[in-house]
Length: 118
Image (tube, rainbow, N blue to C red; front, side):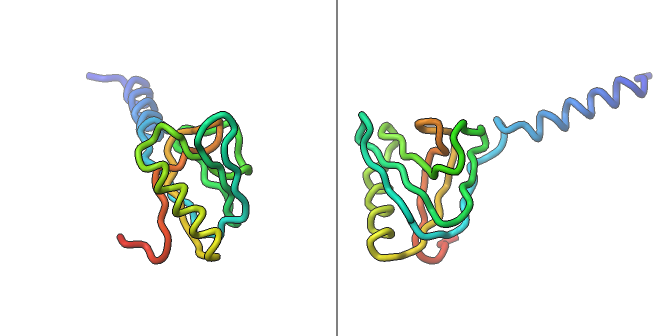
């Protein structure tokens, strides 16, 4: 027969594992306007900021409140750059999907513009 303390410890450990950021999925931001864009540094990449609160990655990033970053090694980064610039120039709202960090900011892995398709 198992003792009650062991069951409590096992339940607490299981709850901690399920709540672990490593098991969490990517996070969406709210829809917002692009209010600033930076390019370059040493890499062919882009950082930008929206007029809605910055959403952190499931794995927390060191820099918050300074917007989002694109990783130049990610597939689709050129398309992401195009959508951000297009939205900025047209005054359209976008939302971003973040997972992980790039340059210590939340790393964008997807961008939606217009009405959500799902």
